[in-house]
Length: 112
Image (cartoon, helix red, strand yellow):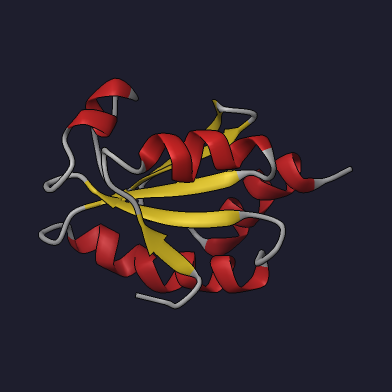
């Protein structure tokens, strides 16, 4: 995993995502090891994390190891990217989407 993406768990989610999103947007990549589209999306997420460093915090959550958070946020398919801002879900991207689609969503939350 890229050095600028940290893994979060059910227990660290409140601090690392909800609380952190009050200072800057946080994008959570919900994934699993068996999910091929998740692996296809990983380099894109890593690239976005590098480019948005300092503007957006990017974290990954393995849904097989952490079942509480995905259930709470109604994650039905992976990969799913949720953008949190001010402690709330601000946006959602489902599927292995192109980088520019992710960037456009993040720009809505970092502009201004």
